[in-house]
Image (cartoon, rainbow, N blue to C red; front, side, top):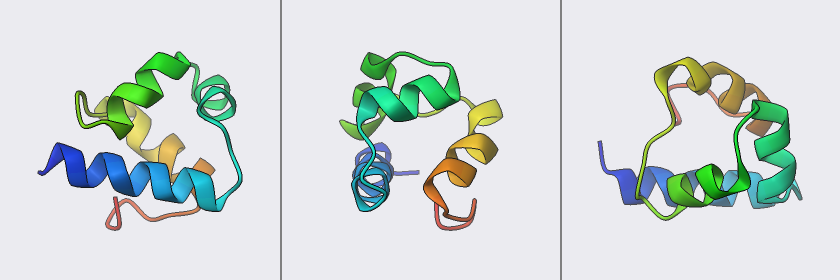
Length: 64
């Protein structure tokens, strides 16, 4: 898995939904700093958050 590539995809998907990092973070129960770390490729979402993240961004787990 390429963390930077996945992070950029998360950011693009979030922006396509006109959603801020704070809004997405609130819906997933994480901090906006956590979302920023994902998008910058520093960290990956926890496996337990993959499904909720995909649901919020209207993407499939395979796309992620």
